[in-house]
Length: 209
Image (cartoon, rainbow, N blue to C red; front, side, top):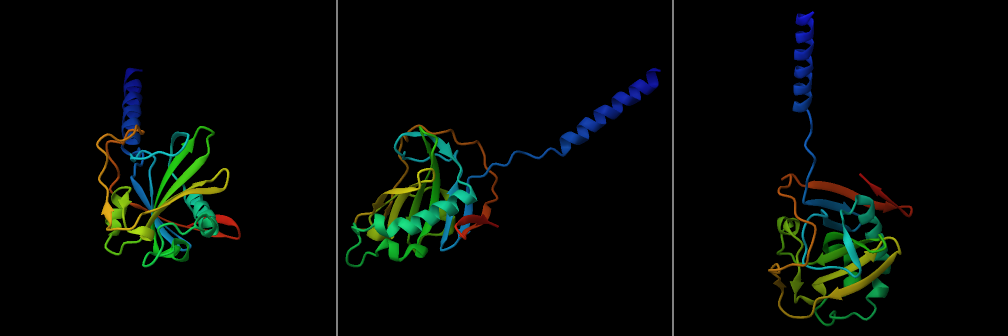
């Protein structure tokens, strides 16, 4: 009786060991490249630290393909009205709602104290700025007038608001603050592979590939 029991124990140990070999690690990533209708950008994971907040912030979230497509639909639909005063868009500075497809984007997700999902969209038009740099971190800038702007979109209320267009002057990429506001801690490591997602909006509904 002992030999069959020992054999059974050995088989169980071997089964568990084999199962452990095939367990996939939980995927961690810093940024996902996103393509869609008239836009190209990078969505940042909720654990990536940033140096700014939104009103009534209660946390962070990672924007999904559908949420990015929805935010882009709302922003492109309402931007001309929100930008009706054309602040910092005189002379050689472009009017931003007339050139939306030329800006590359960065997306950061926030939640407020009502649980609403708010996407902060950062738009940059700089031919010298590489895709690698855009994917490396959320970039804050000064100068450059209508070539740089950011805006917020509350997906729950469908509100597009908080447009800020850079002032005129030479372009400066701002360094990280030494003591950023509290955020969710950054994971120790990320998967080096970058996700690429294609999104869009069709017949009033977000679609992805």
